[in-house]
Length: 405
Image: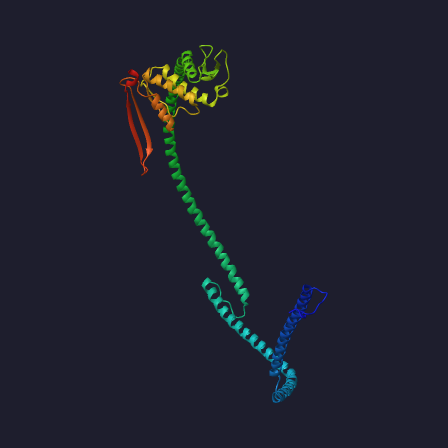
């Protein structure tokens, strides 16, 4: 492997000698590989050259075939010289044939013109005879005959058009007179109808003026009645009830809503809102002075104040979802107010709510407190088939035995 005798002693280490030996072998292997590749490439080129040589030998003509081609070439040269000698005569023959064809064509055209001229002259004679004009002679030029017949025809056409326009004008005049007569009759009928309508409108105008006077009197009386009702409703008593209810629901609010009353009795009464300091003095508009929750409280207490200020026809109160924007303290105070209205004022309350906790809280706060007192709860839902369900539950008064004991 290493190319050395084991008994040999050398100053060069065995590892270095083996590395050099491996390098030499690797170089020789590379040369052998390059020579093998070169040999394969040379063999391929020799194969391609042999193939091309075979193709060239296959395309080489035989001596007999070359002799035949030379003979054919000589014949072609002789025929070419003969054709060149015949070129001038052929050109003259072609020119003569072309001139003969042109002469024959012109002769055919002249014959056709002569036939058309004869046929046209016969046709013109028949037309002239049909128009009652003299039949043209053979010596008379055809264009003059046509011009004379055309002038006669145009004159007859103008005369016919004039007569036709006269007939149309007469017919149109008759139709216009008939239309005008019908229109005159219609206008007379319309005038009669308009006169009748004018009389009816005059009567209606008189009635309308009378009704307008009555409407003005009714408006004046309605305004007076409205002013009286507004003055009777929006007064200090309503403001006092509203103030008490609002303070009960919002005890910490320094501003109290109220209606501004007119200073003189002759002024028109309008329901204008304002706020008052609880300590005295006036504030601004409630929208600027109160929060969103207190605005809701003010609207709710105004509704209750109007209900309590007049004698109700039916002792019912319907309040739809009244606790919007209210916190827990306002809800508790509002529930106490509802309990007072239901238990002390004898009002029947109908309160729809959307939240389950609020539903249960109001059910607890408004539960029956004495005999013959009743609370009805109705819970709306939806079944699995999509139908609306209503769970009806009446609650009656049950004495608390534990407290009584």
